[in-house]
Length: 321
Image (cartoon, rainbow, N blue to C red; front, side):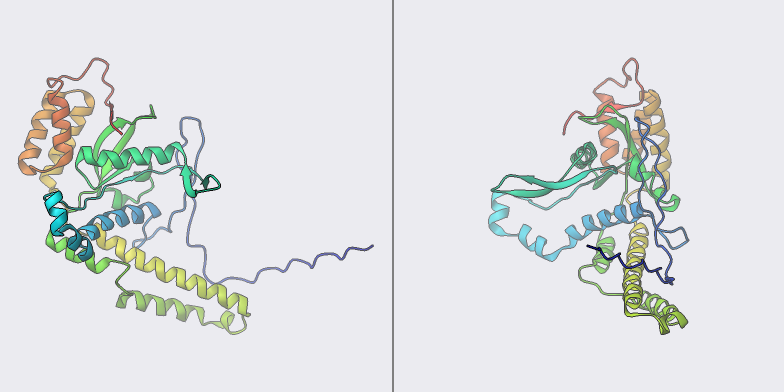
């Protein structure tokens, strides 16, 4: 019996919109393995995926504070009687690495979950936000994927090892001021309640006009559907980029004078000159009394009498989960 040959593969027609992402390698880990991650194309108005992720979590922290339904819940009389001063606070730990996604459970209950030491590390960073008194802690792996303009907005806060890992990790945070002005701006950026801005619509119209060329005139339905899908993705990307830029433009809790003192103090702390570092951190505390990382490192140094332990390598262990 003759089996009919499969139809010859058709050569795909040229596609107007070029690829939107590149895949650069990451530095190899201790095993010499290198991972790859999608990054948006370079350009003055472009951001990496990591830029957008950090901005997205920063925006989430502000939206939690400005959410009217959460505020109403927190003001519930019975809740306040049981827990005076109750409020909703969030913290986010960001790390990057491989993970296995799958269904875990039994015949009675199954949950989709992620398994990886990288997932555990992100969980440790989320818990550590309470120790440092910050909304966001991100690892050096995430920071390495950020564009130079956005990474410059971060503040290095410590170098640590976490439970379950002996590999030193540099931690960063993004200091966003939670004042009334920033909260109002964040409310306008809420993607669940806001539509496209006039700038977004203009960019979308320009991209649609580019698609109306000779290629579109004789294109088949499949190609038109593909172009429409790509244009819709581009519109979402433009909105994400504008929202990301707006987040990084928000006011910060820190000032230039504070950051200069902080950077000097942190360098002395990591080198083991704890007495000098403590003096600079004390000046930081005068400028910004409520800064969490300053308080955390000052207390850590004071408990050890301003003396770095023998064999100090500029890394401390986060003992709590």
